[in-house]
Amino acid sequence: MIYVKRDPSLIPDQLLQVAERAQQILETLPPADRKAFIEKKSHIWRSFARYLAKMSYGKCWYSESNDPQSFFDVDHFRPKKAAMRSGTLTDDGYPWLAFSWENFRYSAGKSNRLNTDEGTDKVVGKGSWFPLLAGSKVADWANRCEAFEKPILIDPTVRGDVDLLDVDANGYMQPSCSCIGPDKQERVKRSIELYGLNLGNLVSARKRVLRDVQDNYDNLMDLIMANHDLFSIERLISQIRRATSSDAPYARTARSKLYSLPDGARFCAQPEDGPNQNI
Image 1 (cartoon, rainbow, N blue to C red):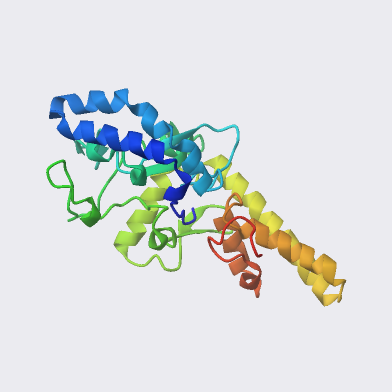
Image 2: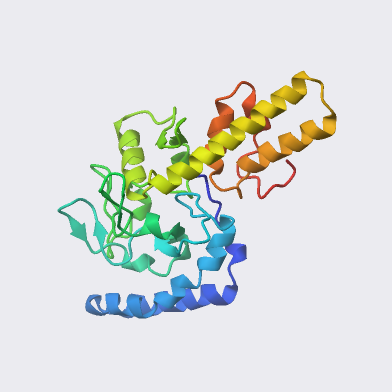
């Protein structure tokens, strides 16, 4: 997972206006009619998918997967109809955010929907989960204080959140060196579980990135030590930097690998600079 910068300029004004009109109607409805209205208007948030995808270069905001054979959803970060806080506690969620594009996240199906990890037989996936840290405020329709909540799930649109995650030498997501304290550790553990970040196919994909970066780095060092031609050296540097650019699949993995190598950080693209620009 890397930071995703949301860009409203990518969204047509007409679509934003459609969502705003739906919100205005929702605000006038009695509680018993809200869920049915939200479901009836599901096409609205689905229409945002192509524009959300542009913000992450077609990658899932949670897993960084860009698998063309996977289906992608527009996930409501804060669930629109029901929010599971624990195995025994569920409330009405955040219906007032059903049409708020800032609550949308572009997500691969395996991160967004409940499914079984074939390696562990555990059920993973976000579904309606939205647990909060102990003692957190809890927003509701009458008191929309979500800005003061303390979510457990890591949010890819918050820089400080994504910095809590890292990738180990075997391709598994893990807490980063800055993930200090029980609350942060809990957030990382639960986020990895609920987003399905260590499903087998994702771990395998990260392993390939780790191998490619290592191979390119080793080849680069050999060329530099041999005083090889500058063109070949620059070509390899560009190739390594492309792997760490924001539009590259599993860029977090490539960056983690380079940071672990001697002087490797100097070959990383600047975080979130954009797709292969000025690198």
